[in-house]
Amino acid sequence: MAAPPYPRWFHPCLLLVWLFIGVGLRLINLTAKPPWTDEFSTLVFSLGNSFLPVPLNQPIAIDVLLQPLQPQPGATIQDVLTHLFSESNHPPLYFVLTHLWVKLFPTQAGLVSLWGARSLAAIFGAISIPAIYGLSWLAFRSRLVSHLAAAIMAISPYGIFLAQEARHYTLAILWVIASLACLVVTTRHIQKGNQLPLWLVFAWIGINALGVATHYFFALTLITEAVVLIFLAWEQWRQTDTGTWGRGDAGIGGRGDAGNTDEILSASSPLRVFPSPCLKFSFFSPPWGRIYAVAVGSLIAGIVWIPTFLDNAYGDKLTNWIQGDRVGIAWISPIFQAMAAWVTMIVLLPVESPQLAVVIVSGLVMAIFLIWVVPILVNGFKTQLYKPQSRMITQMFAGVVVGAIALFFCFTYFLGIDLTRGARYNFVYFPAVVVLVGASLAISWNIPPGKTVRWGVTGKMSVLIIWVIGFLSAITVIFNLGYQKYYRPDLFIELIQNTSKVPILIATTQKTHVQIGEMMGVAREFKFHDSVSLSAKFLLAHKDKHTNPSNTLQDTLDKLPRPLDLWLVNFRAAEPEAIKNCVKHSQTLPAINGYEYKLYHCNS
Image (cartoon, helix red, strand yellow):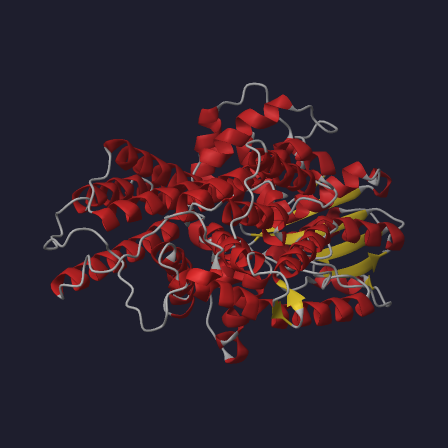
């Protein structure tokens, strides 16, 4: 029995509900968590400033260390490009947009507004909600699938995590969605044997160019799209070569009833991907010629950045953290890291709570939830895969996801670049996952009343449970009980305040602006928590083959007056002889995320 039609205003209003929820979740507690080193890179370079003027190898005051965070009235976009290209390994689009955006916000104690910088990422994250709705509608022609995908995007803990950082990932997600939309339209043209319109060719190239200009890893999305197109070409060639192309009646985007389970093809019915008239396949027949043009245009849009990337002297140093040799358990850790990232796209309860009991209960509930929900999602996926209206488009999105995951593991195990260590890099296929989850949940939603999907739960109730768990997961991220910041300078400053009562020197070794960002986090907390009474100084002891940080610290300690508390923070060098005249703090102190430290009391 067909569902009663909804008023014309219903679907736009419901989409506004998802958007309202998504915006609220992304803006709540937006500045409650301190910025970490990658965000400091965004802030400094977007202002058109540089890390290079920060003095090294000498004790400096808080305000000196934070000077790169001060907006300069004369800074221009050219300054942004100059410093970004010479000191970082990222393309410029997001930094230029942030440069223009933060000018709209007043400073905080003379420093750039953190709320202003993070709000841009939050806005792009919120825009992804109607964007994923549009992509799902374009793909499945189903309002149900579209609303469910938008609802999942609104509360995804992974999406919230990315949207609350002053980084470029939410903008990159929008380009991924737009590029996938072009792939969907192209898939339909391949199926029908129609030529791609020129506007689509130029739009797709432009979107891909903007994506690469936002994040170089957007190229991974393009590679997965290329793999999907190669598969479609092979499938088309195979069916024409065997004479089966055109026999079936399967299509995509048919009547928009993606959730109806009563029309699943029987296992014995052959599924034909291409229902067009039987023609001899040619690699230059429509629309393949223009697809090659898109490929060439996108390749050129990526190649233009290679000289800039190779000329950067800091590239290898900034990516050392995802490179290295594998020994023992390190061979299997990428698998668990990848699985953790997949799970958090839909669920993440307070497993990083400071209370052990909360951690245990949260982990147990997540495990039970996953045991319950995974078969539901898999069943929905299989159903969409066997439906004639949705089979090909489901294959397309699944190909994007599987292809991207395969690329991640190829980089990890064959190139020695462990992309699974950075959950944020999963942005390259995250929208495809959301669309597939929405399509799968549509199957459960349309299960007739009285029938259950799993453990006695009905279809609609299972969807509601999944969404509520997702909403609670979003709250978990907002209050820093999941996807915690890599650095916790707020806790470190609290520890210093409770431990040191005399002037302090915080010393660290420095290789790149990453270490400067680590100390900026501490200095910023000092400034905003009125802790200047401790008379804190910072020492950034440069470390390379020509400079010994131990000698730098030795010289500094010889010159500073006593009493003095020396905090060695992430100090990757031998301790100098002068420390022997200091007393190591005897009491056990708590571990702090991002800050490995030792405390010495120097009284003479």
